[in-house]
Image 1 (cartoon, rainbow, N blue to C red):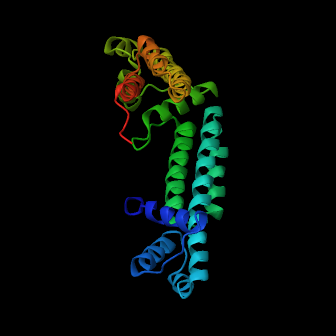
Image 2 (tube, one colour; image 1 turned 135 degrees about the vertical axis):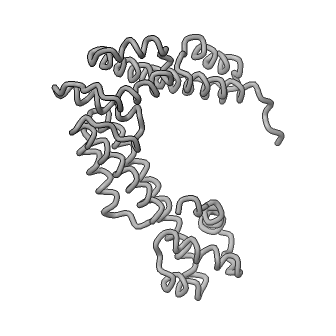
Image 3 (cartoon, rainbow, N blue to C red; image 1 turned 90 degrees about the vertical axis):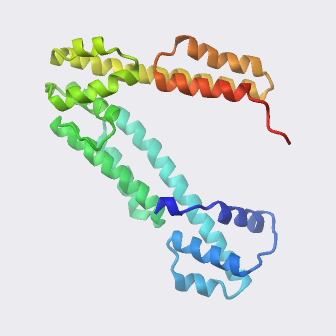
Length: 262
């Protein structure tokens, strides 16, 4: 469903009509756009057709479509932030409840779809936390974080073949060598240390990159391009995690590119 939806045109129409007070012209194309968008935000075809009988009710329909898009987007974005905070604290039950609360009120199918996917992921992670068993359908690093929480709860780490495979996949993404990884995988204690190293490297890299991005953006917007570049150079001088090195390099290339022509 998400691949079929593009709300750029309906947002543009709403901005022109509702914010700039341009007249709404009910051409065949506009009618088709409003009917399609109404369906995508769970307004019935009958209600949409009725609304299109006059300009005032068509304008109200446009406003309702935009409001549902905005409300759903804000609701889901806020829920994701709350879920992330609760996951950091190890509260997967609370995180699941946040998404259930979204699903209790959300009507837009696209946002419901995203919420349901997230709830499935959280449910799967809760199962990993409860059992210690790896789920091949879940994100590797999220499962490592959950297993680390499980250890903190007093459970012993079972060094299974699945866990070894997961750590072998994930260690290179944190710039940990094969030699270091294989040495760590000789014992559950070594695997625990390896897990902690993977998680801490990503936490540190994310914090460093986001802080540098804030400084870079502030300097770029003030016209100080050279100091903006230096923020990313400073990241690259110390960063070893490939994902964040690549992100810093992309930002640096963007700063080095000529500005678009007006």
